[in-house]
Amino acid sequence: MEYTVSLENWNYWALNLCYGTGAIGILILLVHVLRLAVTKDSKTKYDYINASEISLLWYTTILLIISVALYVNTFSSELTVLLIFVRSFVTIMMSLIVGVVVQNSLKFYYPFYIEKRLKELRYKPRISPKTGKPMKLLSEEEEDVYLDEGMQAEENVYSIDYDVWVDEETGYTKIEKYAGHLHAIQCPECNYQTLRVTKEEIVLEPTIDTEGELEKYFDCGYCGYKTKKSFHVAKLSEKQKLEATI
View: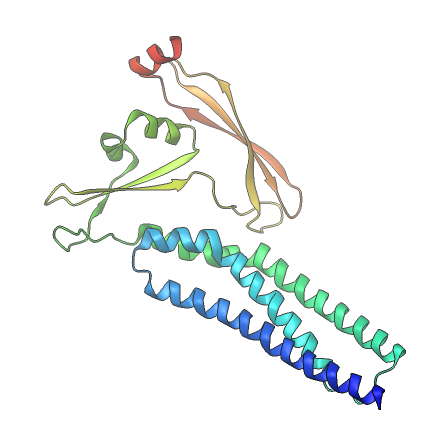
């Protein structure tokens, strides 16, 4: 009698936990989709996707794996030590396999898709609140007029990238800030989007007369491929030289 009661209790609580974890996982996914749907500003949506989407998908996956694992172990007709061990072992192994597959997909394949969406959001024409018409995205040369010296210095060392949108009718300006090397790029060795900047080093300081040189070190998180590239750093302005000597 005690054996039957404990078995019924296990099935009851396992089924309830299954529904609970599954509902939380689906809720997280629905909230994410709803937030994307109601967010109209392209930059706000860009920042949200970049900061949260992959981690939210991973949390959802974990909860759904737990939910399915509980479900397949719910309707037991008998409960013995051997059966508990075998079913637990098989369930854990299958859950780990699915988890690793999804994790690798999110880490190595999904960034290709998310990078495409982020690029579309970043360069989607902004609408001027003054005229309701599309604004113009300025080129690197044109935007310097709207950036202060600190902003220009950030761009010169590739730590920050600024986009400047201008309403040519009214002069209304919108400046958006992006991380200079926020995303991984495609590795030439393994072709995965896992090549990231790990270190930046100025090997030649810029002066008022000559450009400097910046070296960026790249490391692939998948195959371990390493490389480095050199970039020019803009000459110092008179004001920057004066500040450096103070």
